[in-house]
Amino acid sequence: MSSDVKPTETLDVRGEVCPYPDVKTQKKVKKMKSGEILEVILDYPLSAERIPRSVEKMGHEILKTEKTGTGEWRILIKIK
Image (cartoon, rainbow, N blue to C red):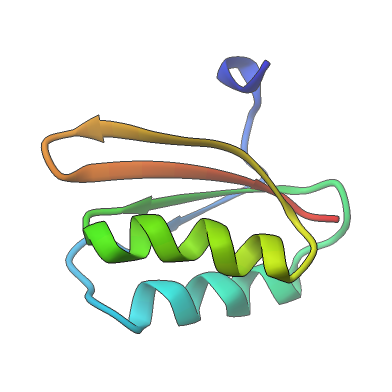
C-alpha cells in the first residue's frame, strides 16, 4: 500500500540531531490538513524511533518507517 503513496510534502532533517528533527516534524504536522501525507527523511537514529511515537500520540497514522540507506530513514505520516 505505502509504496505507491505520494507524499504531499517532504521534510528533510538529515544532518540534524535531537530535538530538532522531532520538533520540526511536529510543527510541520500541525500545519498540514487531514488526509495529507508527510514524508520525513532523517539520519539520526534516536529520532527514527521517537518521531513515530510522538506523531501517533498526536493522533496521526504512521504509514511506513523504513531504512533507506546506511543510517538513513524515511517515515510516511498520514495526517488525521
